[in-house]
Length: 320
Image 1: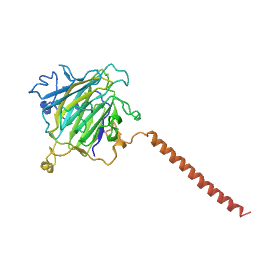
Image 2: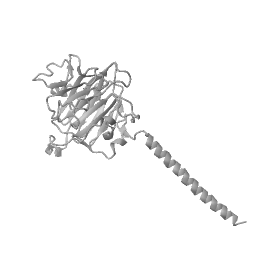
Image 3: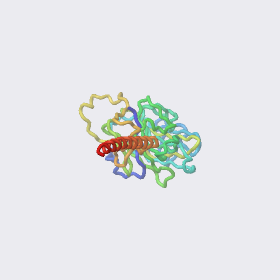
């Protein structure tokens, strides 16, 4: 099953969000100011679309309509355990609910392939973390936007923008990340079959999760009829020093498919700041069904009570 994972509201992240340190920083997979040589033939990062590289930020889209931009690491990552720290900023002149579309962080098989999923191709293979800033599903009023989530795909799934990716979603949550005075920090960790997306307030963890090695890190963003500036400040990858069981030595991690196995339907889960999942809030149709069941229960009880009362009355008459 290939599912969406959700994350919690994002704020400033502390240094102890990972057990990695500067010794484990993988510079060949990290994008750091002043971005020297980005886009050159020998660079470790390449960009496309509307992306503008400055000495202070990488602007994937300006606050203009119908733009797409991306930046991608040119070096495939062969680490089995890693944590990516992303510092970014979403801002613009649009009023409340009049901005879009969003930004994504990727770990995928292919790179620099523009498309409809926040500036990247649909039916991607790998992991996508989405910061969706515009509500498309007018019926999805049990959540507010911007909304952050993640998706695992083996290439068989399409991202449904009309439903904001909801049909394949494991969880997600709102995040006040737009037009903030500070940048947004996010840490994405994959280690020993466990995906964790965290910030200073905690997030979610999911097990039974498989990602291959040899994929590429990147980021993309898109605007539509509404727009925003989508800026990447930095992307820093840390290698996590983790022991694996001996039986994993025989696994060819370049050939496995991205996958997630769950016992519950993704639509029955949302994130919990404690790192667990809880049931979703009752939607309109669930409330209707509960009220209908309650009403039927009352009717049944009334009918049974009436029958019992009538029989008692008849029995009492026989004693007179």
